Image 1 (cartoon, rainbow, N blue to C red):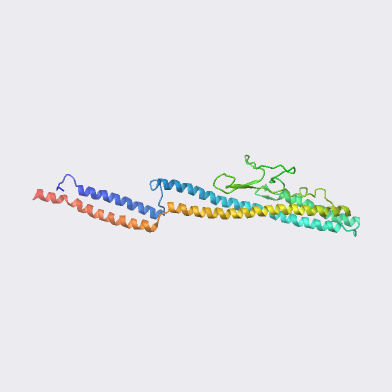
Image 2 (tube, rainbow, N blue to C red):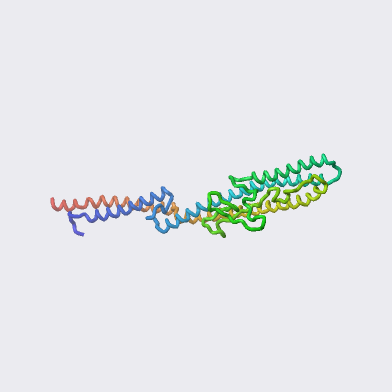
Length: 296
């Protein structure tokens, strides 16, 4: 290489290498301080796109877990009310058994009848009053079928949805994967088949016994349905949690920085930057040799 003073090519080369190493050193510093390998699109365009889609799905999965937990709370509320209704039905059967015997006079029988009707009224009140977040569950508004056997579809087009409750827990809108409907039958005294039941006479009390037995069976079917749906939601929560955890791990492998590897790169670029600075200082002093020839 010629000894010239018009251009300092060695200094230019050293400066270019210094800029390159310093830029990579800055990148390593940014990654180590943020913990992210992919922080912007320039780091990994394809990886960034995949990561953002994964993050959206992960957020939806965790919200789905919360939705399913809310569904369980709703079902537990309905089951708790049905447990109270169960106690009322048991008391009604006890009163009907008492009134079915012939050892009571009419006045005593009317006292028994009064409590019997009070229990029946309380069952209807509980069924009409039980709600979760404003959603009434035991008055027939969530029933999947009408008394004539026709099905009631879910309708969510309005501000207030009608029909069975839609529990949404997936990341999409596929009924086979992302949601299902919870239907709860009517638990009022009339829907249980006791709308005209009374025990004011011995014969009526005997007839009421079989009607109450059928009502208890109907109530147990509602509770069994609630229990099966609760178990299904609990299994759904377990599956969603595992799915979210695995997707979080995949997102981490794409997005997060490997600290050990990046620290090695940081030290490497730090040494190269220091070497480039030293060589740039040396290259800047070389033109003095040409000046010595001119002045000598």
